[in-house]
Length: 172
View 1 (cartoon, one colour):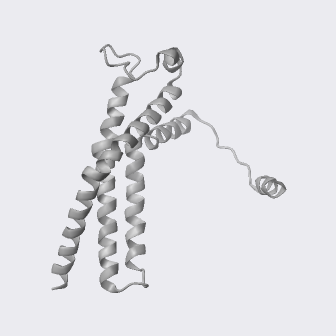
View 2: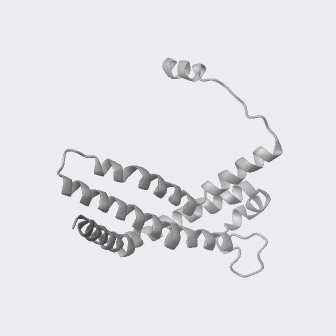
């Protein structure tokens, strides 16, 4: 504990000069990144920029294995990000948004709002955004238990074969 406290004490303290424009930008960025489909997209882009290189420069295996591994990694990332972002998480987030609308007039606009916390959710916008993000993430996780096998796996195999065929054609 003493080591941890020393490390904390050594960390420089700083504050952000507060002005409304900067705070609004930080809130917007926080809201944007915390959406499940945007978060998945950021993770997918990061993975696409780093992981294929690791497979390609793995000198513990032969050239052909490296290329196939790289192609499979790219296919997994594209399939997982595409399905996760556009087919699962994005639509589920929109559905949760529409079914947790405090001001909505349709019979489904408050469907996923818990009755016992309705006044608290209605009065606190940050709480409502966090609730929506957590609910969307939970529902997306359940949906992905199905789509990982039904969509991601076949799409990964298809893309891997496509990339491998293109790689072989390019060598000829």
